Image (cartoon, rainbow, N blue to C red; front, side, top):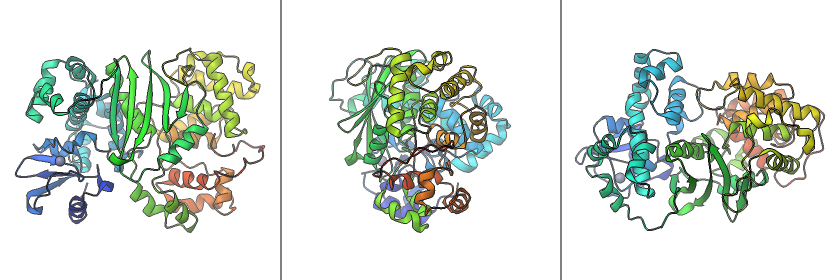
Length: 494
Ligand SMILES: [Zn+2]
Protein backbone atom coordinates (compact mmCIF):
# COMPACT_ATOMS: atom_id res chain seq x y z
CA UNK A 1 0.00 0.00 0.00
CA UNK A 2 1.45 3.36 -1.05
CA UNK A 3 0.85 6.13 1.45
CA UNK A 4 0.73 9.70 0.20
CA UNK A 5 3.38 11.37 2.39
CA UNK A 6 2.07 14.88 1.87
CA UNK A 7 -1.48 13.89 2.65
CA UNK A 8 -0.37 12.03 5.79
CA UNK A 9 1.66 15.01 6.86
CA UNK A 10 -1.20 17.46 6.44
CA UNK A 11 -3.64 15.15 8.25
CA UNK A 12 -1.17 14.65 11.09
CA UNK A 13 -0.54 18.37 11.59
CA UNK A 14 -4.27 19.15 11.48
CA UNK A 15 -5.08 16.14 13.73
CA UNK A 16 -7.74 15.39 11.14
CA UNK A 17 -10.12 12.75 12.52
CA UNK A 18 -11.28 11.84 9.03
CA UNK A 19 -7.94 10.12 8.54
CA UNK A 20 -8.04 8.20 11.79
CA UNK A 21 -7.24 4.54 11.11
CA UNK A 22 -6.12 5.23 7.54
CA UNK A 23 -2.48 5.48 8.59
CA UNK A 24 -0.32 5.50 11.72
CA UNK A 25 2.55 7.79 12.72
CA UNK A 26 5.72 6.30 14.15
CA UNK A 27 8.07 8.61 16.03
CA UNK A 28 11.73 7.73 15.50
CA UNK A 29 12.99 9.28 18.74
CA UNK A 30 10.47 7.75 21.15
CA UNK A 31 9.86 4.49 19.22
CA UNK A 32 6.12 5.01 19.77
CA UNK A 33 3.34 4.97 17.18
CA UNK A 34 0.26 7.19 17.23
CA UNK A 35 -3.04 7.90 15.50
CA UNK A 36 -3.40 11.09 13.42
CA UNK A 37 -5.64 12.48 16.19
CA UNK A 38 -3.07 12.07 18.99
CA UNK A 39 -3.26 15.02 21.42
CA UNK A 40 0.47 14.80 22.16
CA UNK A 41 2.76 17.55 20.89
CA UNK A 42 3.44 17.15 17.18
CA UNK A 43 7.05 16.53 16.25
CA UNK A 44 9.20 17.46 13.27
CA UNK A 45 8.43 15.79 9.96
CA UNK A 46 11.98 14.42 9.80
CA UNK A 47 11.29 12.49 13.01
CA UNK A 48 8.26 10.56 11.81
CA UNK A 49 7.54 7.61 9.53
CA UNK A 50 4.07 6.69 8.30
CA UNK A 51 2.69 3.15 8.31
CA UNK A 52 -0.51 1.94 6.65
CA UNK A 53 -1.54 -0.24 9.63
CA UNK A 54 -0.90 -0.53 13.34
CA UNK A 55 0.48 -4.02 12.73
CA UNK A 56 3.09 -2.61 10.34
CA UNK A 57 4.24 -0.08 12.94
CA UNK A 58 4.31 -2.81 15.58
CA UNK A 59 6.27 -5.15 13.35
CA UNK A 60 8.79 -2.38 12.73
CA UNK A 61 9.39 -2.29 16.48
CA UNK A 62 7.26 0.66 17.59
CA UNK A 63 5.08 0.59 20.72
CA UNK A 64 1.49 1.86 20.82
CA UNK A 65 0.97 5.31 22.35
CA UNK A 66 -0.76 5.31 25.73
CA UNK A 67 -2.47 8.63 25.05
CA UNK A 68 -4.19 8.19 21.68
CA UNK A 69 -4.60 4.42 22.16
CA UNK A 70 -4.17 2.96 18.66
CA UNK A 71 -6.21 -0.04 19.83
CA UNK A 72 -9.34 2.12 19.64
CA UNK A 73 -8.83 3.51 16.15
CA UNK A 74 -11.48 2.82 13.52
CA UNK A 75 -10.63 -0.09 11.24
CA UNK A 76 -8.81 0.14 7.97
CA UNK A 77 -11.42 1.30 5.42
CA UNK A 78 -9.66 0.16 2.26
CA UNK A 79 -10.45 -3.46 2.99
CA UNK A 80 -13.95 -3.27 4.38
CA UNK A 81 -16.28 -5.38 2.35
CA UNK A 82 -14.05 -6.01 -0.67
CA UNK A 83 -13.54 -9.54 -1.92
CA UNK A 84 -9.80 -9.72 -2.41
CA UNK A 85 -7.67 -12.41 -0.79
CA UNK A 86 -6.33 -9.91 1.73
CA UNK A 87 -9.75 -8.70 2.80
CA UNK A 88 -11.03 -12.26 3.10
CA UNK A 89 -8.02 -13.12 5.23
CA UNK A 90 -8.58 -10.04 7.39
CA UNK A 91 -12.17 -11.05 7.89
CA UNK A 92 -11.15 -14.53 9.05
CA UNK A 93 -8.50 -13.11 11.37
CA UNK A 94 -10.99 -10.66 12.85
CA UNK A 95 -13.49 -13.45 13.47
CA UNK A 96 -11.22 -16.08 14.93
CA UNK A 97 -7.62 -14.89 14.99
CA UNK A 98 -5.09 -17.38 13.73
CA UNK A 99 -6.17 -19.99 16.25
CA UNK A 100 -6.67 -22.94 13.95
CA UNK A 101 -3.57 -23.73 11.97
CA UNK A 102 -1.74 -20.41 11.98
CA UNK A 103 -0.76 -18.74 8.73
CA UNK A 104 -0.54 -22.09 6.92
CA UNK A 105 -4.10 -22.93 7.94
CA UNK A 106 -5.32 -19.50 6.94
CA UNK A 107 -3.68 -19.75 3.52
CA UNK A 108 -5.16 -23.21 2.98
CA UNK A 109 -8.63 -21.90 3.85
CA UNK A 110 -8.19 -19.21 1.22
CA UNK A 111 -6.82 -21.59 -1.37
CA UNK A 112 -3.45 -19.85 -1.75
CA UNK A 113 0.09 -20.68 -0.66
CA UNK A 114 1.34 -19.40 2.70
CA UNK A 115 4.28 -17.59 1.09
CA UNK A 116 2.01 -15.89 -1.41
CA UNK A 117 -0.33 -14.80 1.39
CA UNK A 118 2.59 -13.35 3.37
CA UNK A 119 3.75 -11.46 0.29
CA UNK A 120 0.27 -10.02 -0.28
CA UNK A 121 0.03 -8.91 3.35
CA UNK A 122 3.42 -7.22 3.25
CA UNK A 123 2.60 -5.49 0.01
CA UNK A 124 -0.81 -4.15 1.06
CA UNK A 125 -0.67 -3.85 4.85
CA UNK A 126 3.04 -3.61 5.48
CA UNK A 127 2.83 -6.46 7.99
CA UNK A 128 2.74 -10.25 8.04
CA UNK A 129 -0.47 -12.16 8.82
CA UNK A 130 0.91 -13.21 12.20
CA UNK A 131 1.76 -9.58 13.08
CA UNK A 132 -1.80 -8.58 12.16
CA UNK A 133 -3.25 -11.34 14.34
CA UNK A 134 -0.88 -10.56 17.22
CA UNK A 135 -1.68 -6.84 17.05
CA UNK A 136 -5.38 -7.58 17.08
CA UNK A 137 -4.98 -9.79 20.17
CA UNK A 138 -2.88 -7.21 22.00
CA UNK A 139 -5.17 -4.35 21.11
CA UNK A 140 -8.22 -6.18 22.32
CA UNK A 141 -6.44 -7.14 25.54
CA UNK A 142 -5.50 -3.49 26.06
CA UNK A 143 -9.12 -2.43 25.55
CA UNK A 144 -10.31 -5.00 28.09
CA UNK A 145 -7.68 -3.85 30.58
CA UNK A 146 -8.60 -0.17 30.12
CA UNK A 147 -12.34 -0.34 29.77
CA UNK A 148 -13.51 -3.30 31.86
CA UNK A 149 -12.94 -4.72 35.31
CA UNK A 150 -12.56 -8.25 33.99
CA UNK A 151 -9.95 -10.19 36.02
CA UNK A 152 -6.60 -10.44 34.19
CA UNK A 153 -6.82 -14.22 33.92
CA UNK A 154 -10.02 -13.77 31.96
CA UNK A 155 -8.61 -10.92 29.87
CA UNK A 156 -5.87 -13.30 28.76
CA UNK A 157 -8.42 -15.92 27.70
CA UNK A 158 -10.82 -13.43 26.09
CA UNK A 159 -8.09 -11.90 23.96
CA UNK A 160 -6.93 -15.30 22.77
CA UNK A 161 -3.65 -15.68 24.69
CA UNK A 162 -3.25 -19.34 25.56
CA UNK A 163 -2.11 -18.64 29.11
CA UNK A 164 -1.65 -15.78 31.57
CA UNK A 165 2.14 -15.93 31.37
CA UNK A 166 2.13 -15.34 27.61
CA UNK A 167 -0.35 -12.51 28.10
CA UNK A 168 1.75 -10.87 30.82
CA UNK A 169 4.93 -11.20 28.78
CA UNK A 170 3.36 -9.75 25.64
CA UNK A 171 1.83 -6.78 27.46
CA UNK A 172 5.04 -6.05 29.35
CA UNK A 173 7.11 -6.26 26.22
CA UNK A 174 4.89 -3.92 24.22
CA UNK A 175 3.77 -1.44 26.88
CA UNK A 176 6.70 -1.72 29.30
CA UNK A 177 4.16 -1.98 32.09
CA UNK A 178 2.30 -4.85 33.72
CA UNK A 179 -1.41 -5.29 32.96
CA UNK A 180 -2.22 -4.12 36.50
CA UNK A 181 -0.16 -0.94 36.10
CA UNK A 182 -1.98 -0.20 32.83
CA UNK A 183 -5.35 -0.66 34.48
CA UNK A 184 -4.39 1.75 37.23
CA UNK A 185 -3.50 4.32 34.57
CA UNK A 186 -6.93 3.97 32.96
CA UNK A 187 -8.54 5.33 36.14
CA UNK A 188 -11.67 3.20 36.11
CA UNK A 189 -14.39 5.15 37.87
CA UNK A 190 -17.68 3.62 36.84
CA UNK A 191 -18.70 0.60 38.87
CA UNK A 192 -19.56 -2.19 36.50
CA UNK A 193 -22.03 -4.97 36.98
CA UNK A 194 -20.83 -8.53 36.77
CA UNK A 195 -20.48 -9.73 33.17
CA UNK A 196 -21.17 -6.21 31.89
CA UNK A 197 -18.57 -4.58 29.71
CA UNK A 198 -18.36 -1.11 28.25
CA UNK A 199 -16.45 -0.29 25.10
CA UNK A 200 -15.68 2.88 23.27
CA UNK A 201 -15.82 2.22 19.54
CA UNK A 202 -14.31 5.05 17.51
CA UNK A 203 -15.36 6.08 14.01
CA UNK A 204 -14.07 8.48 11.41
CA UNK A 205 -16.45 11.47 11.40
CA UNK A 206 -18.95 12.44 10.21
CA UNK A 207 -21.42 9.83 11.49
CA UNK A 208 -25.12 10.26 10.88
CA UNK A 209 -26.39 8.62 14.06
CA UNK A 210 -29.95 9.93 13.77
CA UNK A 211 -30.53 8.25 10.43
CA UNK A 212 -28.94 5.02 11.65
CA UNK A 213 -31.22 4.98 14.67
CA UNK A 214 -34.32 5.85 12.62
CA UNK A 215 -33.59 3.03 10.21
CA UNK A 216 -33.08 0.52 13.01
CA UNK A 217 -36.08 1.80 14.99
CA UNK A 218 -38.51 1.33 12.09
CA UNK A 219 -37.30 -2.26 11.69
CA UNK A 220 -36.76 -3.21 15.33
CA UNK A 221 -38.31 -6.62 16.00
CA UNK A 222 -40.55 -6.16 19.07
CA UNK A 223 -39.18 -8.11 22.04
CA UNK A 224 -35.78 -8.70 20.40
CA UNK A 225 -34.69 -5.14 19.65
CA UNK A 226 -35.62 -1.81 21.18
CA UNK A 227 -34.76 1.77 20.34
CA UNK A 228 -35.31 4.02 23.35
CA UNK A 229 -33.94 7.37 24.45
CA UNK A 230 -31.31 7.55 21.75
CA UNK A 231 -29.99 4.02 22.30
CA UNK A 232 -30.28 0.77 20.40
CA UNK A 233 -30.65 -2.39 22.48
CA UNK A 234 -31.07 -6.05 21.56
CA UNK A 235 -30.88 -9.57 22.93
CA UNK A 236 -28.02 -11.67 21.60
CA UNK A 237 -27.16 -15.34 21.52
CA UNK A 238 -23.77 -16.78 20.65
CA UNK A 239 -22.28 -20.24 21.26
CA UNK A 240 -25.20 -21.22 23.49
CA UNK A 241 -24.75 -18.19 25.75
CA UNK A 242 -27.26 -15.33 25.91
CA UNK A 243 -27.00 -11.67 26.76
CA UNK A 244 -27.77 -8.25 25.39
CA UNK A 245 -26.02 -5.24 24.02
CA UNK A 246 -26.81 -1.54 24.03
CA UNK A 247 -25.27 1.06 21.75
CA UNK A 248 -25.42 4.85 22.00
CA UNK A 249 -23.71 7.85 20.46
CA UNK A 250 -20.90 9.93 21.92
CA UNK A 251 -20.33 12.74 19.45
CA UNK A 252 -17.72 14.52 21.57
CA UNK A 253 -15.40 11.53 21.23
CA UNK A 254 -16.29 10.52 17.67
CA UNK A 255 -17.31 7.18 19.12
CA UNK A 256 -20.18 4.87 19.87
CA UNK A 257 -20.55 3.54 23.38
CA UNK A 258 -21.33 -0.16 23.53
CA UNK A 259 -22.43 -1.91 26.67
CA UNK A 260 -22.36 -5.69 26.43
CA UNK A 261 -23.82 -8.00 29.03
CA UNK A 262 -22.59 -11.51 28.35
CA UNK A 263 -21.39 -14.29 30.61
CA UNK A 264 -18.71 -15.74 28.32
CA UNK A 265 -15.80 -13.28 27.96
CA UNK A 266 -14.22 -15.46 25.25
CA UNK A 267 -16.95 -14.25 22.88
CA UNK A 268 -16.41 -10.55 23.54
CA UNK A 269 -13.91 -10.06 20.73
CA UNK A 270 -16.38 -11.55 18.27
CA UNK A 271 -19.30 -9.55 19.67
CA UNK A 272 -17.39 -6.28 19.40
CA UNK A 273 -16.35 -7.03 15.81
CA UNK A 274 -20.00 -7.69 15.05
CA UNK A 275 -21.12 -4.41 16.61
CA UNK A 276 -18.50 -2.57 14.56
CA UNK A 277 -19.89 -4.13 11.37
CA UNK A 278 -23.48 -3.56 12.45
CA UNK A 279 -22.91 0.17 12.85
CA UNK A 280 -20.59 0.41 9.84
CA UNK A 281 -17.79 1.93 11.90
CA UNK A 282 -15.06 1.27 9.34
CA UNK A 283 -16.71 3.38 6.65
CA UNK A 284 -14.72 6.22 5.20
CA UNK A 285 -17.30 8.88 4.41
CA UNK A 286 -14.89 11.25 2.69
CA UNK A 287 -14.06 8.66 -0.01
CA UNK A 288 -17.70 7.66 -0.40
CA UNK A 289 -18.87 11.27 -0.70
CA UNK A 290 -16.19 12.10 -3.23
CA UNK A 291 -17.45 9.40 -5.60
CA UNK A 292 -21.18 9.86 -5.08
CA UNK A 293 -21.40 13.64 -5.18
CA UNK A 294 -20.27 13.57 -8.81
CA UNK A 295 -23.80 12.44 -9.74
CA UNK A 296 -26.27 15.37 -9.68
CA UNK A 297 -29.08 13.09 -8.44
CA UNK A 298 -27.03 12.17 -5.36
CA UNK A 299 -25.11 15.41 -4.81
CA UNK A 300 -27.80 17.11 -2.75
CA UNK A 301 -28.35 14.20 -0.39
CA UNK A 302 -24.61 13.55 -0.02
CA UNK A 303 -24.47 17.04 1.44
CA UNK A 304 -27.70 16.84 3.49
CA UNK A 305 -27.06 13.35 4.85
CA UNK A 306 -23.35 13.62 5.61
CA UNK A 307 -22.01 10.59 7.45
CA UNK A 308 -24.83 8.26 6.38
CA UNK A 309 -23.94 4.61 7.03
CA UNK A 310 -25.25 1.31 5.76
CA UNK A 311 -26.83 -0.44 8.74
CA UNK A 312 -25.53 -3.98 9.16
CA UNK A 313 -27.05 -6.66 11.33
CA UNK A 314 -26.35 -8.82 14.34
CA UNK A 315 -27.19 -12.10 12.64
CA UNK A 316 -27.41 -12.90 8.93
CA UNK A 317 -30.11 -15.54 9.31
CA UNK A 318 -32.34 -13.24 11.33
CA UNK A 319 -31.86 -10.43 8.81
CA UNK A 320 -32.74 -12.68 5.86
CA UNK A 321 -35.90 -13.92 7.59
CA UNK A 322 -36.80 -10.31 8.19
CA UNK A 323 -36.17 -9.45 4.51
CA UNK A 324 -38.47 -12.29 3.42
CA UNK A 325 -41.20 -11.06 5.77
CA UNK A 326 -40.88 -7.63 4.20
CA UNK A 327 -41.69 -8.78 0.71
CA UNK A 328 -44.76 -6.96 -0.54
CA UNK A 329 -45.72 -5.48 2.82
CA UNK A 330 -44.88 -2.17 4.45
CA UNK A 331 -41.92 -1.79 6.81
CA UNK A 332 -44.41 -1.56 9.67
CA UNK A 333 -46.23 -4.70 8.56
CA UNK A 334 -42.95 -6.64 8.39
CA UNK A 335 -41.96 -5.41 11.85
CA UNK A 336 -45.26 -6.69 13.26
CA UNK A 337 -44.76 -10.10 11.63
CA UNK A 338 -41.19 -10.33 12.93
CA UNK A 339 -42.45 -9.60 16.45
CA UNK A 340 -45.03 -12.36 16.15
CA UNK A 341 -42.36 -14.85 15.03
CA UNK A 342 -40.15 -13.91 17.99
CA UNK A 343 -43.02 -14.25 20.41
CA UNK A 344 -44.33 -17.53 19.02
CA UNK A 345 -41.04 -19.33 18.37
CA UNK A 346 -38.25 -17.47 20.19
CA UNK A 347 -36.93 -18.46 23.58
CA UNK A 348 -38.19 -16.27 26.39
CA UNK A 349 -35.38 -14.03 27.68
CA UNK A 350 -35.82 -10.75 29.53
CA UNK A 351 -32.38 -9.26 30.22
CA UNK A 352 -33.32 -5.56 29.94
CA UNK A 353 -36.29 -3.22 29.44
CA UNK A 354 -38.07 -3.79 26.13
CA UNK A 355 -36.44 -7.18 25.54
CA UNK A 356 -38.51 -10.31 26.05
CA UNK A 357 -37.19 -12.89 23.58
CA UNK A 358 -34.27 -14.24 21.61
CA UNK A 359 -34.85 -14.44 17.89
CA UNK A 360 -35.66 -18.08 17.00
CA UNK A 361 -32.84 -20.24 15.66
CA UNK A 362 -32.79 -21.94 12.22
CA UNK A 363 -33.34 -25.26 14.06
CA UNK A 364 -36.67 -24.03 15.39
CA UNK A 365 -37.90 -22.21 12.28
CA UNK A 366 -37.02 -25.12 9.98
CA UNK A 367 -40.06 -27.00 11.27
CA UNK A 368 -42.30 -24.14 12.40
CA UNK A 369 -45.87 -23.64 11.20
CA UNK A 370 -45.64 -20.01 10.18
CA UNK A 371 -49.20 -19.73 8.88
CA UNK A 372 -50.21 -19.62 12.55
CA UNK A 373 -48.82 -16.11 12.84
CA UNK A 374 -50.41 -14.83 9.64
CA UNK A 375 -47.83 -15.64 6.99
CA UNK A 376 -48.99 -17.01 3.65
CA UNK A 377 -48.12 -20.66 3.06
CA UNK A 378 -45.68 -19.77 0.29
CA UNK A 379 -43.82 -17.19 2.37
CA UNK A 380 -43.76 -19.51 5.38
CA UNK A 381 -42.20 -22.18 3.17
CA UNK A 382 -39.53 -19.71 2.00
CA UNK A 383 -38.56 -18.99 5.61
CA UNK A 384 -38.47 -22.71 6.39
CA UNK A 385 -36.36 -23.50 3.32
CA UNK A 386 -33.88 -20.80 4.36
CA UNK A 387 -33.79 -22.17 7.91
CA UNK A 388 -33.09 -25.69 6.59
CA UNK A 389 -30.29 -24.44 4.35
CA UNK A 390 -28.65 -22.55 7.23
CA UNK A 391 -29.13 -25.47 9.63
CA UNK A 392 -27.47 -27.83 7.15
CA UNK A 393 -24.58 -25.40 6.64
CA UNK A 394 -25.41 -24.91 2.94
CA UNK A 395 -25.83 -21.20 3.58
CA UNK A 396 -23.41 -19.44 5.92
CA UNK A 397 -23.10 -15.77 6.78
CA UNK A 398 -19.87 -16.03 8.79
CA UNK A 399 -16.35 -17.17 8.05
CA UNK A 400 -15.22 -17.44 4.48
CA UNK A 401 -18.19 -16.11 2.51
CA UNK A 402 -18.04 -15.62 -1.21
CA UNK A 403 -20.38 -12.70 -1.87
CA UNK A 404 -21.39 -13.89 -5.34
CA UNK A 405 -21.91 -17.50 -4.29
CA UNK A 406 -24.07 -16.51 -1.33
CA UNK A 407 -26.30 -14.41 -3.58
CA UNK A 408 -26.71 -17.40 -5.93
CA UNK A 409 -27.47 -19.78 -3.04
CA UNK A 410 -30.11 -17.43 -1.67
CA UNK A 411 -31.77 -17.09 -5.07
CA UNK A 412 -32.04 -20.90 -5.32
CA UNK A 413 -34.59 -20.79 -2.51
CA UNK A 414 -38.09 -20.43 -3.97
CA UNK A 415 -39.44 -17.01 -2.96
CA UNK A 416 -36.07 -15.29 -2.72
CA UNK A 417 -35.21 -13.06 -5.66
CA UNK A 418 -32.39 -10.71 -6.60
CA UNK A 419 -33.77 -7.83 -4.51
CA UNK A 420 -33.66 -9.85 -1.30
CA UNK A 421 -30.22 -11.27 -2.14
CA UNK A 422 -28.80 -7.78 -2.72
CA UNK A 423 -30.41 -6.46 0.45
CA UNK A 424 -28.88 -9.33 2.44
CA UNK A 425 -25.45 -8.72 0.83
CA UNK A 426 -25.74 -5.08 1.79
CA UNK A 427 -26.66 -5.61 5.44
CA UNK A 428 -25.37 -9.07 6.41
CA UNK A 429 -22.13 -9.17 4.38
CA UNK A 430 -21.39 -5.43 4.53
CA UNK A 431 -20.79 -5.49 0.77
CA UNK A 432 -20.42 -1.75 0.07
CA UNK A 433 -21.29 -2.28 -3.59
CA UNK A 434 -24.49 -4.29 -3.10
CA UNK A 435 -27.27 -2.74 -5.13
CA UNK A 436 -30.93 -3.81 -5.33
CA UNK A 437 -31.37 -2.22 -8.74
CA UNK A 438 -34.94 -3.44 -9.18
CA UNK A 439 -36.16 -1.43 -6.19
CA UNK A 440 -39.07 0.79 -7.17
CA UNK A 441 -38.09 3.65 -4.89
CA UNK A 442 -34.54 3.69 -6.14
CA UNK A 443 -35.73 3.87 -9.71
CA UNK A 444 -38.22 6.60 -8.94
CA UNK A 445 -35.77 8.70 -6.96
CA UNK A 446 -33.06 8.34 -9.54
CA UNK A 447 -35.39 10.11 -11.98
CA UNK A 448 -38.01 7.52 -12.95
CA UNK A 449 -35.61 5.34 -14.88
CA UNK A 450 -35.85 1.71 -15.87
CA UNK A 451 -33.85 -0.93 -14.05
CA UNK A 452 -31.41 -1.14 -16.93
CA UNK A 453 -30.92 2.63 -17.03
CA UNK A 454 -30.37 2.66 -13.28
CA UNK A 455 -27.80 -0.12 -13.53
CA UNK A 456 -25.94 1.74 -16.24
CA UNK A 457 -25.95 4.95 -14.27
CA UNK A 458 -24.84 3.20 -11.06
CA UNK A 459 -21.59 2.03 -12.69
CA UNK A 460 -20.17 5.42 -11.76
CA UNK A 461 -21.15 4.89 -8.10
CA UNK A 462 -18.97 1.80 -7.66
CA UNK A 463 -17.77 0.52 -5.23
CA UNK A 464 -20.22 2.46 -3.04
CA UNK A 465 -23.59 1.54 -4.49
CA UNK A 466 -24.94 0.39 -1.10
CA UNK A 467 -24.40 3.95 0.15
CA UNK A 468 -26.09 5.36 -2.95
CA UNK A 469 -29.02 3.07 -2.13
CA UNK A 470 -29.23 4.45 1.40
CA UNK A 471 -29.09 8.03 0.08
CA UNK A 472 -31.85 7.43 -2.45
CA UNK A 473 -34.00 5.71 0.17
CA UNK A 474 -33.56 8.67 2.51
CA UNK A 475 -35.34 10.93 0.09
CA UNK A 476 -38.50 8.79 0.31
CA UNK A 477 -38.44 8.57 4.08
CA UNK A 478 -41.33 10.92 4.67
CA UNK A 479 -43.55 9.79 1.85
CA UNK A 480 -46.45 7.37 2.31
CA UNK A 481 -45.63 3.71 1.60
CA UNK A 482 -45.89 2.65 -2.01
CA UNK A 483 -48.94 0.69 -3.18
CA UNK A 484 -48.50 -3.10 -3.09
CA UNK A 485 -46.60 -4.53 -6.02
CA UNK A 486 -47.23 -7.79 -7.78
CA UNK A 487 -43.73 -8.88 -8.65
CA UNK A 488 -41.02 -9.85 -6.19
CA UNK A 489 -39.97 -6.25 -5.77
CA UNK A 490 -40.55 -5.29 -2.16
CA UNK A 491 -41.21 -1.69 -1.30
CA UNK A 492 -38.54 0.26 0.51
CA UNK A 493 -36.19 -1.96 2.43
CA UNK A 494 -37.93 -4.65 4.43
ZN1 LIG B 1 -0.37 9.14 20.50
